[in-house]
Image 1 (spheres, helix red, strand yellow):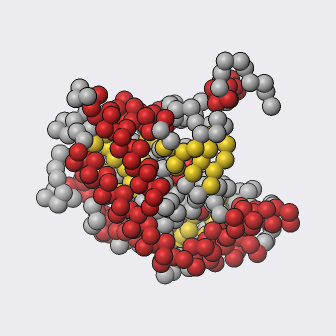
Image 2: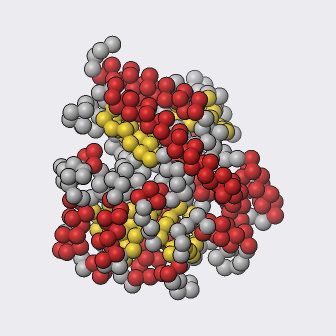
Length: 445
Ligand SMILES: Cc1ncc(COP(=O)(O)O)c(C=O)c1O
């Protein structure tokens, strides 16, 4: 270990060393250097305790550092065999995991491909869609985030900096997402009659590309990095009609929204629509890297050798994922009702904050996939990323760990296992921060 430089805290020291050797990523403005954690709590290297409202980017749906059963399964498998070259040689564990996972899927699913991340799961979905349909184009949404490798990056249109110098991406056509709080067509739901769907039909699918050349539309059920944008309940049903008319597949990217986060295993189920391909990552790996692409069996199979990888189906990873999936299998109904109940408690607090504070413009989400949007004032709805940062810094200073999303929203995504007491304590910290910044902003101290 490098020596701690005098005058600097442990965190500051590690961060300075990080900046010297690591390529820049996204990184938050507060000095959080993780040390250890359990349940809904996490400690930094200074020994400070935080309530976790981030699930470490939606990875610890079932508690920080996952359960003892998961850790034991990983340890036991690691002492036997970690890597078995699953795409070349056979092994039972990943097959059993696939069989278990298929039980959570709609009837007719599926065939499964394992990888190591969300971006890879989406790369596979993209490639499979094109192979299945023998079509080249793909539709995706503005504000959508699907990963950072070339194919998934082409689908991503969240922040232009993520795509800089990597285009052009000629096979993807982006269309507006139903972000009703800031409708791109300046209309309001339901009076709009889904003007955004009409647009897809009338413009991209009429004037830009023949629908017969479109393999798939890739969408998140709820936009994650884009700001936790929840479409109206009937949106995907209406959209699916357009897709079905032209045999365009629907890929549901469940990387952030899936795996019980909304109270349902598949977030798309909240909209009563069955996709043709689902992708998952983040929480499904229970803390280790796992990407999953699940396709409807009726789509057939891809040619041998068309796709594979080295680490997909890694035995240590799958052992942990299986232990966590077994837990969900045994307790699904209870988890579902708990997520809904905690989500209701959280939404009540968020809606009250929207009532009470001028800078809270919107409160939204399903289950425990929640966010508030911070604005300069309710009338203008002008995004206020600086105020958001102040709120997050103040909350951090008082022991609450959160992540931003979109231009000016804050995610509220604690582990689903959080107690009502910690949930309430976390909201108390957040509300005090909002009250302070709101008062400062409007000079009402
Ligand atoms: C919806 C969605 N898809 C894909 C990804 C990419 O996942 P990964 O970072 O594991 O590649 C993310 C990551 O935030 C995501 O939220």
